[in-house]
Image (cartoon, rainbow, N blue to C red; front, side, top):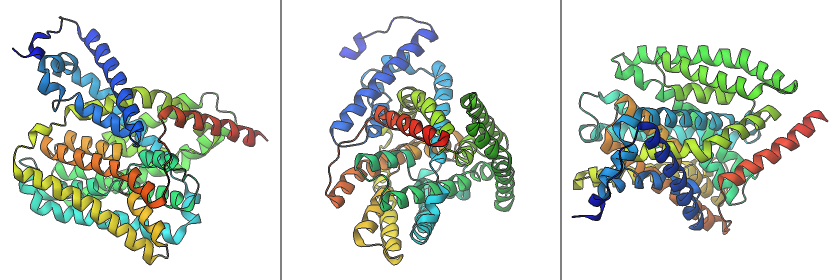
Length: 437
């Protein structure tokens, strides 16, 4: 009899099991993040890996009873809601990183690279979906929504992870960092808009009708956000913003609910609210500090594990599936790197700058997991396809920091979310002093 079969979990109510599961998730992700940091990777790599370890690929394989006790089907609804809340807050922060002034400062290079880094991988992903549809799409899912989703999954960049890597390597504030962050945020904004059309296509709407629904919904939401909400938030910041944090969080969740109700995903609304939010204001720093204090140590680990529970490496049971995994990885990394490098060179960048941009914009990280989770919830992909793209996200993200250090010849140790939180607190204090002065 296997040792795992002797480890029988005691009977317990849902509350006890949820609390035990959350404690294990938080501790496991923190430990895995520390290991990744020692290996020269951003902590998010270890956190994603911890999520996979606690899922069916490892824990479920060696101790099925333990996995069922901790993450049984009767508990998944609650964990799923917490994970979705973490994703909404995460994408909101990503949207708040968008800086229009940075786009204007590096106009030519940024415009060229951001357009190419979005359009070419999206187009290649759509074309790749045509032969992949028979194997990687669930039964009953049409080619159009699957192709559109695959294109977005091949295109997206992980803005917060990218920001971590830029800080790790001491690049924050230089020209390459500004261009990379601006291209990543603008490209991701376009990806969320495209992704918003997928639910309508899955519901059987014609392409024109789906596009019309998405455009009108986003136009109305954006108009309200930028015409009414953004000025109000700026005035609130100027007046001291005593109730700023709860007002911002309420507005964020309401916007996410509206876009979810209208047929686009809640994540799209969260990103739009983040773009409209004055993230560079004193209020922005207070909100970011409050959100990150809960997001990074608690909600994101729950999201990683929730993603890991749906990642089953044992599901890749045939050479054909592993071949598709290799093809998707090579195409995703190769097409985006080559496109960014060539476009940057044509726009006048030197070889080193072009190479750094090509590496940085290949970082997919957690944002890819958010997109994949949406696809799984919508039913546009199945578990096997989800696992293939999780592998692609892990490998492409793990490549980023070592390749960047090799190109730049630097070796700055990665930092933790606590360092990031402390830096934001310091920045917020400085901004408030300047604002009052």
